Length: 212
Picture 1 (cartoon, helix red, strand yellow):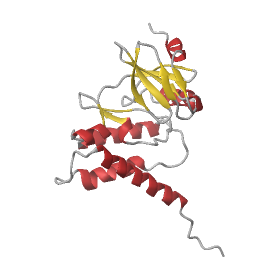
Picture 2 (cartoon, rainbow, N blue to C red):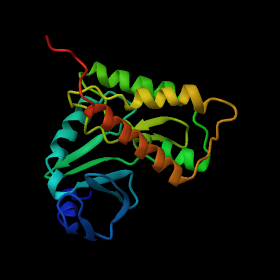
Picture 3 (spheres, rainbow, N blue to C red):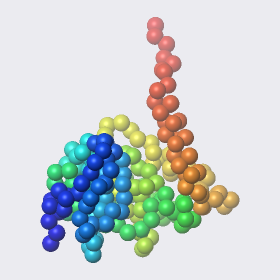
Picture 4 (cartoon, rainbow, N blue to C red):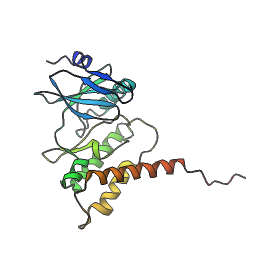
């Protein structure tokens, strides 16, 4: 059985605490992803992922662990196997993210959208606030099932409309026969940038209320 605490201690980083460079890690791990706050490694010959948080975000490990515990009965999320100082061990979920699907032309169906809605509804029923739902943290497995990862922001207070916006785009545009089901990465990145820019400007817009 792997000693995940020791594996976590062997992972070396350098550079800024908020966006470090990975300099060394054990041969028993394979880097499978780099996010905004952590590196994700798959343990070779296993179905487990070790998520190692950047120095500036080590505290998020404990927060995310508690969220995974609240989601223990929600089949759409990975199972948490272990949590420690700055790291988590969760299920490895094979498949394609919705971002991958758009880049490769893999169909996204009403069944997938309904499953995502169900996953988020169940999460809300556990007292969580599903937030930061985007194309890279929703996966379609080889069996065609939906899985969601990275629920770290499910306890924030503000209302997040990202999934509502994505769902609206799916209904209004993606489902149309002539809408392209395959898009180049640069176009997806541009759309994401413009969306974030629009959201930022909306939040910063001054109130039009008249004070008497």
